[in-house]
Image 1 (cartoon, rainbow, N blue to C red):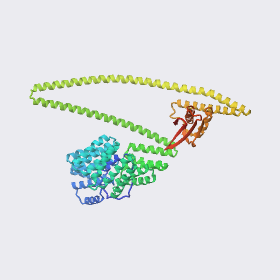
Image 2: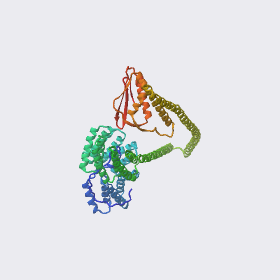
Image 3: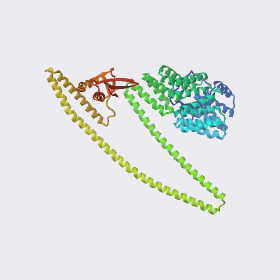
Image 4: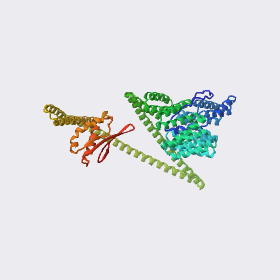
Length: 634
């Protein structure tokens, strides 16, 4: 929680701004719509009223209400009013005011991305609200607990708390609580890809909001329904609800609702290929979300803007935005956003052909991913330990309850003290004996498992040593074999060249052509041997890639299979010029040569025709080699 006691300032009306289009918007949606009804006229009235109020419980209530009303438009004001209210409640010992102040600070910290502190504050709110029967606050506190679980990727736990909030809100006929619980349940089911269930809750939220004329909730509801259709790729329906949500958000001037609506519309236009409109909406959304102090939302929007600049070949812009977002994310330290931004930054430098910088950033990205995986494993271990301790405690409690029930039964039967003590002594003796036996069995099992683990570890170490030796021997064999094979090839090449020189004076064209074919094939075989040697080198991560003109590759193939072409009366037909690709020339030569030979050899036609074509799909080339028999794709 912030310690700065900033003096609340009167509201400023900044220009309309912009926010994110993250696929995980429904996680942030929770805290952003705890009530989502800031009325500016109400804020002005309360601020005027605050000036003349003495330091009493009424002033605390006004400060808390102002703090909440500002959370969608100026997060600094939310912190300032909540801190002032909390300080005053401590002096007045006003429990209700303290609970609401802590709740507002919980909302503000969650919006800023400080989930851990938000969770700690919320855990303080629940017992306070329960002690004074503040059911409406309790509804929001349970929902806040679910939102924190959802942000921690625990949707099943989140749904339990959301359902508890929903049931309590219905019990108290608390319309705002019902609406917000519906939004949260819808978000949780949306994260589980249960779109129909999510829509049902969003529709129930809209139905509940209409009688109380809550336009902000109507905007959120339409936006959420739009997103379910967007996820199902029903873009027509999605656009209809997005437009409705944006229109309502502009009418009520709720900056956070407007920012998220703009961000969603930007995402939609980007998907539809309308990149200029997407950029316009994103820039507007970023301006708005910055004005309310939502750092996490700003970082997410900047990330999406960087992605847009990458897709529109503006790497310098993408680098600038990524660096800005990374600097801002240091405050929140949200790992997944940092990984996204580092990935885009590496791609931007690669797009600029600054491959060294791109590689360095990608190396940093991989190290952070490894670190994150390690932290996840530690977290899982802690959760398992917590579950174990919980089960153990439940078992102990069950044992104690059983013993108490037994004692009650003994008393009800009016047995003598001596018999009662004897029974208790016998039970304790049995329990001790059972515990001792269990301990002894557990110790024996542990010793047995330790021996097995040691044996298995030794076997694995021995196997690993043998595998390393085998790989080294294989590499040496391949190296020697490759060098031995190249020596006779050199002789064939040299004598072929010598024969060509001798035959040039005799004008024997056919013999010269044959010599040329021999020369090309020996050169190709030499290259294959070199590539084989490269594959056997265990320190090589991937085959050497270079620009390969596939048209030239096909020209090189034809002489090597000329005998098959003539013998089978076959010919190769190139439907359109082939592209230049980054690949291994020898591998592609072998692939196309084998496909063409198969198309000729296994073709029953008297005149086989081999057709070669390709199509472009995204950033990939798909090649086809067809004949007037079978069809084979490469």
